[in-house]
Each structure stands twice: as C-alpha cells, then as structure tokens.
Amino acid sequence: MQAIRWRGWAGTNSPSCSRTCSRSPPRETAERIHRELSNPIRIGGEELYVSLSIGAASSLSGEYFAENLIQDADFAMNRAKALGRGCTEIYQNAEHLEARAQFRLETDLRHAVWRRELTLNYQPLIDLKTGRPHSFEALARWHHPTRGFVSPVEFIPVAESTGLIVELGRWALDEACRTLAQWRSDGVAPDDLRVAVNVSALQFARDDLVAVVLNALERYDLPGRCLELEITESAIAEHPQKAVDVLNQLKAQDVIIAMDDFGTGYSSLGALQQLPIDILKIDRSFIAGMLELEESHKLVCTVLSLASHLGKATVAEGIERFDQAVALRDLGCTLGQGYAFSRPVDNAHAAEFLRRTAAQAIAF
Image: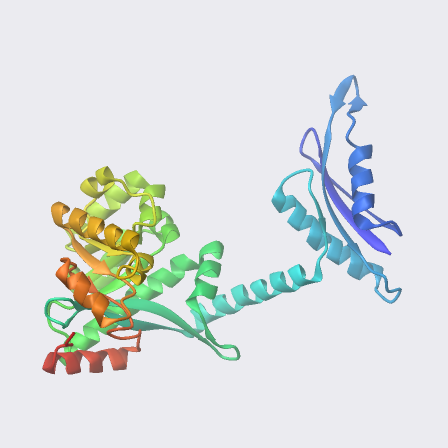
C-alpha cells in the first residue's frame, strides 16, 4: 500500500491538496500524475498550467496504518517543496529520523539558552615574541543534561539556521565581558589583556551590535580596547556598506576588530584598506601544512607580508607544534593560537594559565 500527497499551484498560486492509495510503485504513480497534468487546462478561454510537488510513502506491511502513511507522505512532500516546484520525493525513514533528531536538537538548544546550560571556554592567543598571553578567544560549549558534550560543529549551524545565534551571540558577549572583569578584579589579568568574541553573519546583519557591545562594556566597566570582535570575511562581504558603518562606530569606542579565517573568503585589497580592521586571523588550514607544503608556506608568507604593509597584526590559528610557532615568529607573525599552547579551558583554568605564564613565559 502507498500514500501520495501533492500540492499544486494552478496559475494563481492558490494551493490545492489531495491524497490517494495505490498498489503501484510510488515513483511510477507520481510520474503518471505529472504526465497527466503536464498539458494545459482550459478555463474560460485561458490556458492554465499546473505544477505539482509530490511526496510519496509506501509499506509492504498490512499492519501499517493509512494515517501513518499519509504522515510519511506529508514529510516527503515538504522535502519536495523545498527542492522546488515539479519535484517528487519518496519517503525515506533515515531522512525522517535525521529530521526528527535535528528538530530535537533545535528544541534542546532553545532550552539550553534559557536554562543557561551553555558555558564559555577560553583559548589563549600567545604573543610569539614574548611567549605570554596577549588575549583569550571565548568559545561556546554545551553540556547537555542527557547527551553530554555537544560539539559546536553540531549546534552552531543549528543556531544559525534558526536565528538563535543572535541570542547566543548576545549571551557570549556579556559572559565574556563579565569573566574578563572578574579576572581584572582578582588581579590575574593585566590591564591590556583582551577577550575576543565571535560575531556571526546573522548577528552582524540583524542585531543592534553597536548598542549590545556598548551596553556590555558599560555594565562591566571595561574599556573598549579590552574587547575584540571576530567577524568572518563572508559576513563583511554580505553587508559591505553596513560593515563600514558598524565597524567605524565600534572603532570609535576603541573596540578591536579581527577578520576571522582570513584567506578562505572574499576579501579584496580594497575592502582591507576601507574597513577599520586591526587583525587578520590566518585560517588553520594554511598553518597545518606550512612546513611541509610549499603552497601553504607561500600563502602564509603572502598574508603576513600583506598584513605588514597594511599595518595590521596577524594571528596564526591552529598551531599544534612549537616548530610551527618558531617559523611563524621568524616570518613576522604577531600572535599564535592552538593546542601547542593550550586547549580551550574554562574560566578558572584560564585564570590559572594567566598566573602561571605571568611567572614564567612559554618557551619555544
């Protein structure tokens, strides 16, 4: 038995729905429906063309209720609609399970934001000349009450696709500023230590970023120079004029601006000259092979030379070995970040890292 759901638009885009049951293979039935409706329909001397999105589901078991088949066909139809008009999708249980898991993850993430299940870890950026921490990047972590640790690779895309990234970004900014203020109050953070917070493209486009930043700085009595905002090349490229306006307003408050994952996006030399960017962060994909691959080494050298000519500082991401740190330092890279120095740690361990490196710099 099978169930087929279709939604059609006849000229005026007004939807109509129907369903049927058949013993024919579902794709064969769907193709027959498309063929039957491929010719125009004449109404009042006008020709109307019908476009259908079809979802189909079938079962070889007589115990499978028709209502369940209709639900499965509905799911397939929604996938067909997402692909565009005139498409057919056959229900696949694995896809349904994946969609349900994604929905549960989205629901749990909303609860995590409300219930404060999210925390920030901090990874130091090391001055490659002195071996001491220059700043810390704040990175969101989620410890689910039943799932355990949920990777940012898994939940950040969900946050972006649902718009939760805006609320998450506001929380991260506030929490990072609160932590830095606490370190300063405890006497473990030097006056020039900064905390870096990532700003998503959606947050950059939709949120009142300048007001949010200024409120956080004022709430924790921090100077603007203690905060660094990391913005991707793609976020800037998507909203170039807004980028100029927003970044200039932030720079007027002494906030530091870093372009994240530099070299993987769309930036031009003109954009780098026009925008008030202080730091270029070289993507880890270039750092990983710079000592083994000639092309990676050339790319790193090119970026460092460009940054030097433009008067911008540089950060090498993903340093996993000290020989990479030495090579980058010798090439003129300003700062280094990666597991060679420290993994991201919670605020208490980050404070201990500050105490330890204040007494003895990292030697490499």
